Amino acid sequence: MTVLPYAEKPVDFVIPEPIVGEVLAFTPPEPKSLEETGLAAQEVEALLLKHLLTGGSSTGRRMADVLKLPFGIVHELLRGVKAQLLVNYKSQAQMGDFEYELTPEGEARARYHSDRCTYCGAAPVTLSAYIDSVLKQSVRRVRPKLSDLCQAFSDLSMAPAMISQIGQAVHAGRGMFIYGSPGNGKTSIAERVIRAVSQHVWVPRTITVSGEIIRVFDPANHEEAPLAAGSAILSDSNFDRRWVRIRRPSIIVGGELRMEHLELTSNPATGIIEAPVQLKSNCGALVVDDFGRQRMTTTELLNRWIIPLEKGYDFLSLPSGRQIQVPFDQLMVFSTNLEPHKLVDEAFLRRIPYKLEVSDPTPREFKELVKQWCAKLGLEYSEEALQHWLEEHYKKPGRAMRYCHPRDLVNQVKTFCEFHDLPMVLTSKGVDVAARNYFAGL
Image (cartoon, rainbow, N blue to C red; front, side, top):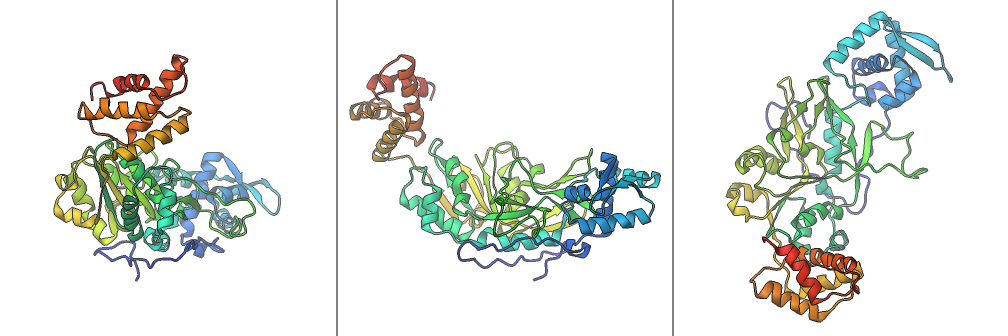
């Protein structure tokens, strides 16, 4: 199905078929010509002129490296702008290259482009190329197995039934609610969801839409995974350097989330447009932590995402007012201390088909966690101290156990022993001191 870059009416994105095994479903090939980049000559020429305006002068190979395009393409374009009397040869460089500088006419043209947008980095990719990449790398294409989930959560103490439930949601490529009391590891679970889908994906540094530059690659949220030197799979000479190889993204937003984070935002000083969090999380996971405590109401978030969650696409508005249709392709994870039905209505809940309650640990699970943390922190475990802990600090005060308590209190017992130069042993006295520090006011 053809996906229109500018859609007047909704266009359904085809749900990708799953891939069996670790398959490179998408690799951006190096363009051999300007036509293969999908860009107009004027777009690349504007980047070249702005680069010269910023740097003063530059060789063709240096500009090709900055724009992440093959030298042959850049060389031909530089011949064109020289013919337009926009650049001059400043000096000759090696291997048939030249040092270029702007003419007065070229400087005026460069300033005109810079006034609209100061961006002069890697050449962008087209929206249609980006859409194609998301469909080919969709998180729905990968079907992790139980062993993948067990590996992803190997550093957490989790019941097999819980791992199974999470695995079903990841396997289906659908969203999930993770809810329960604070301190039981909801955020830790949410952070690890995408680990079960271990593939790398390619994202463009920037996208161009009708001459506007949208920044997609975000070092703050994307973990770059460059190819190893001498990789037998790919090399710099046969993939498009306008794209970046990253680990499947896992973006976490919390109480700071506002409506503007869900829309394209333009920097008035530079003219560069920043992609919203859902676009940056495509082919990965988007975790809304502490759901219900954002700066926007749950109703606002519901109204903004209810259609994208169902249809798999989103509409974003450019500063010019034009709308573009983009994929909405990620594992949506909502983590909250509240029961989902108290936050959103039934219509929204239907679109998040998996609900996972993270309950309190059983006494047996609690004991195993205490043992694990004692071993990890170098404390000698004591059954007597544990029974004292359970009786005095849970049963008598009627306090609920949490998965975080063994880690937090055993750490405090370790600190107590170190400070007082005591044997590194879990003792009733050490537990009492840690509990007094930890539970005061709770």
